[in-house]
Length: 133
Image (tube, rainbow, N blue to C red; front, side):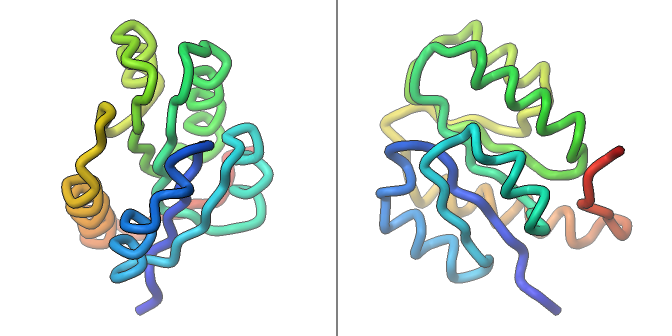
């Protein structure tokens, strides 16, 4: 059975080596510092889960979540909230975010949650992670 694939996406979270190492125990990990590049990355790679860092109170980043969920509805998204804006966080959940962690991050909890979400999807029906056209 092949490993699941996770993207760590965001300017500061990609620098966290403990998170990267923790996820590498059970998943292939792609690091991306620019959230705007996610659609192109998802078109090229089969991804199971995105760790999406929201670094500023930017509605455009939250709207990107909606675009991603519309095109790739079966990819799980976990929000890493660096801006502490409850309205944007609520909007992200409305757009399909599965879970969220606020800064300061507890890396071990994020790793455990990602592993649990990936195990849930493996037990579920066969999934197609390709884009919806």
